[in-house]
Amino acid sequence: MMLTRFLFPTVFLFLNILILCPAGFGQISSCTGKDPHRRRNGSSGGIHLDLHHVHGRCSRTWEKAPPLNLSALEVDDENRVRSMVYRVGEKSSDAIRTTTTVSDTGVRSPLVSGIVIGVGNYIVKVQLGTPATSFLMVVDTGSSFNWLQCKPCSVSCHYQIGSIFDPKSSTTYAKIHCDSNVCSHAQAATLSRVSCNASVLTTPCKYTAEYGDGSFSSGYVSKDTLRIGGKTLQRFVFGCGQNNMGLYGASAGLIGLSRNKLSLLTQFSSHHGSASFSYCLPTSTGSGGYLSIGASYNASDYVFTAMLPSSLDKSLYFMDLIGITVSQSSILASSDEYTRNPTIIDSGTVITRLSSNMYTPFREAIKSAMSGNARALSPLSIFDTCFIGSYRSLEVPDVEMVLGGGSRIKLTPGNIFYDIPRLGITCLAFAGNSRITIIGNMQHQTFNVVYDISKRVIGFAPGGCS
Image (cartoon, rainbow, N blue to C red; front, side):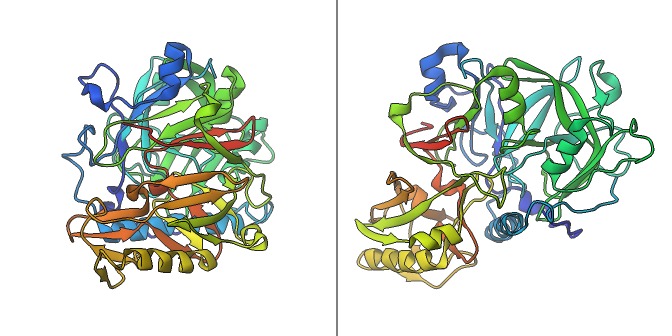
């Protein structure tokens, strides 16, 4: 989350995105995500959002999305990884930067594929204010602070779909003052010092949220009524952005799902019960996915691993990846290695990063298993293991991820390889990293994934989305 004032071209915004289609807007029936929580609990089970890939047939924006850009994928993903490395490399007090810039009672709502923008890959529709106005917001498991662009955009606002939120038009809007505890919570959520007049604590609390790709938002810490998936959250805390620049695409702003007092997850669970959420991320060729917040789930459907506490960053989701098997041959990390190189599961990172000691033998095992049926190519950009053809037509070896506690996740060929149709090749959807291991969203796709903060577990179940 270091501030770098270099802004990448907007072509980087269109890689893997989801855009929201409200129910009843002529959706194809097969595009509704197969949400197991909605199926079992009916209308009483939390927020449920239908999720689609921007390049898939169910997305309402696929015709407007430019072709997938390999260079964009590399730059965007590397920036995301650098941001994660920076966050876990800083201690709590050192991570605060100074800036002078201004359950069953859960929620259900449709989520669809939007625009990858460097700070997250999926977008949801929310309503804010009284009377309510609709906005498309990026959803990110790695972010803690919620914000959206606000009039009068006193410094700068990027282009967004729909109108910009006007605080003056909402009868329930209010700014948070510097004497409120919420102001200090905003400092912890953004990892940047809030701007306050020390002699007049009743002045508005000003925030700045900065991201590793150079994007940022600054404005006023505020509260208003949020409506999402048929549920209402009064006094919802968010940033009312007056200066917003960077890789946000055409979204209005960002919704955070991390473990922090000001994330949507925490604010929602404090009013409506269950501190949990789940999702299934669809592929570009699949139908619908979903996002659920606060819904109950059937534990027997999942294999679980512990959600680990970490002093490196208390808001991110840590777990143990202790090994990988390729055609039943194990590649295991030593216990001190996965303690030294923590593992984060992150919806905003696309390509999984493994520690070098695990990635190198994994890559060589894949090459060996594929040598008899696929022609290998030279490294391409971030992808150092590529083959001619599509994973759909090649004999892909069985790959399992071995999690802490012994749970295993068997990956599909689409979780293992990334097709690049324009070049007629497929590449291993993993890369090496010397500092941390990050389980990216390519390896989440088509799985039902549940984050149960109350029980401190993360669960995986195959066969989701379709």
